[in-house]
Structure formats: structure tokens, C-alpha cells
Amino acid sequence: MGMLEVDAPGKVVVGGATDTIKIPNITAGVGLLFFDQAKKVGTGSVIVLPPVVQKIMKDMLGKMEEKGATAGGISAKLAGGADFFQSAMGSRISQSVMDACGQMGIKVSGKDLGGKEKRTLITVLASGETKVVSVSGEKKI
Image (cartoon, rainbow, N blue to C red):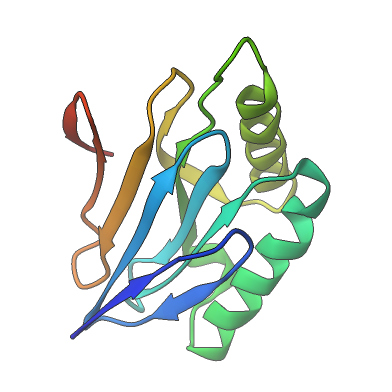
């Protein structure tokens, strides 16, 4: 049983039923988790620039398929996209990720986007339970 942590933007981690994926310190970027409930396989990354959304998502999907996941069984959970300092960068990144999920046929099953808080996204791949932790508390998505 391992804790897999996304410790840099664009880094993709992949795990199975005995793993937990943690995406800490998400601000304007979007922490993105793909999960296949039937296969108990997931990938996680942080996207900080709209132009790389599709590239990172394709990499994530490829790593899941290598572990036996099927495209039709994959859903997404998202956290982040905070808008700091009168900037709408977080909103732009969030919209880019949401649009790409729609274009790729990936259902968004949970999200916690916007606002002005830093977040951490944690998913237990055995159950798919996902929580978002911030200074204002913890919630399941």
C-alpha cells in the first residue's frame, strides 16, 4: 500500500487498488484524477497551463490503459482553479480541463473548483473515496 504524490506540475502518477494518490498544494492549477472503478486504477497530475491540458490527459489515459483500465470506465475528479490576486488564471485552467474532459468523453464525477483557497486532493484507489482538504475544512467529492 503506497502513497503516490504528485510533487510537480505535469508529473503523472499511476496506481492500483493498494495505492492512494495525493495531489497537494493546488492553487490556480487544477489537480486532476482519473479513476476506473472496476479496475481500481487511477492517475493523478496537476495542470497549470491550458496549452498542455490535452497532452497531460492523454499521458494519464495511456498509463491507465497500460494497467488494464478501459476508456469507457474512466471518470475524473478535479480540485483547484483558485483565482488569486484579481487573476482569472484559475478559472481559465479549470475551463480548459472541463472542456477537454468533455471532448475526450470523460465524465467529471466530482469537483471543487474556484475560490481563493489552496487545496489538497486525496483519493484511495481501493474505494474511489476522494476528499479535498483546505484551510476551511475537508469535504468528499
